[in-house]
Image 1 (cartoon, rainbow, N blue to C red):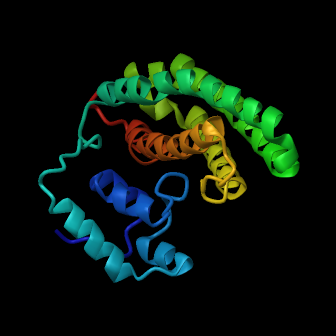
Image 2 (spheres, rainbow, N blue to C red):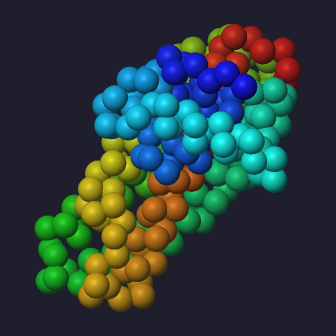
Length: 227
C-alpha cells in the first residue's frame, strides 16, 4: 500500500472507499472539495498529513470492514446503487426533516429566533434544490449514461457539479447554525431528533456526492465501456 500525500482527496476516496471514514472523522471534505491534494487539505485544517495517512492505512488493514469498489463496478450498477441507497431515502427523509424543523421553529422560536429561522430557510432551500437535482439526474443524466452516451454528458454533468457545490455550501451553513450538531441543553425530543437527522443527512450527502463527483461522472465522461 502506497498512499501519495499529493493525491487528490477525492481520488483517494474513490480508490480506497474506507478512507472516507478517516476523512469524515477529521472533517475533510472528500466530495465537493475532493479536488484538493491531501497535503494541502491537511495544511489548511491544521492536521498532520503523516498522521492522517497512518489512520487511513490502519483502516484499510482492518479486513473485517469490507468495502465495495464502485470504481470497478458497471456504471448501471453504480447508478442503481445511488438511486436505491441515496435518492429513494432522501425523498422520504427530506419531508420528515422539514416537518421537524418547522415544528421546532414554531414551538421554540422565542429561545433563539434568528438562528432557528435561518436554519429553516437554509434547509428549505437545500430541500428544494435536492429534489429538482435528483429529478434531473433520474430523467436526463442517468438514462444517458446507461445508454452508453457518457461522453455526451459534459453539459449536464457540469450543472450537477455546480449544484453539488451549492448543496455543500448549504450543509456548511447548517453545521454552523447547529454548532456542529451539538444538541442544546433545553432541546425537546423533536429538537434532538432534528439535529441528529441533519447530521445524518450531511454524512449521507457526502457519500452520495462523492460517488457521483469522484467516480460516476469521471468514468462516464471517459467513455467507460462497463455499462
